[in-house]
Image (cartoon, rainbow, N blue to C red; front, side):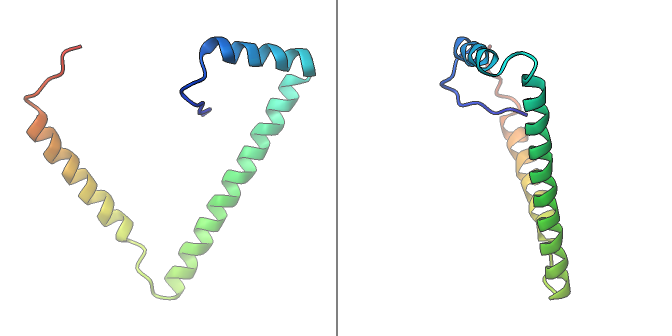
Length: 93
């Protein structure tokens, strides 16, 4: 998913795309996008590997890693409470 700053409008994005086509040519852009995708996939895989290694190390040391499930449950409870309280309040479109 591509996240852009809020201050860039559609016209500015189109202008940037036009400049990219002019600089690299229409035939090179798919190769560039493919390379960027592979790079992002490699970064995601590396971060997942690091996360897995940290979890394994924590389990070997006897550190409880299930606290995230407890926190997630508490967050869900708070969301439900907020929905119950604000359920009768509707925003007008």
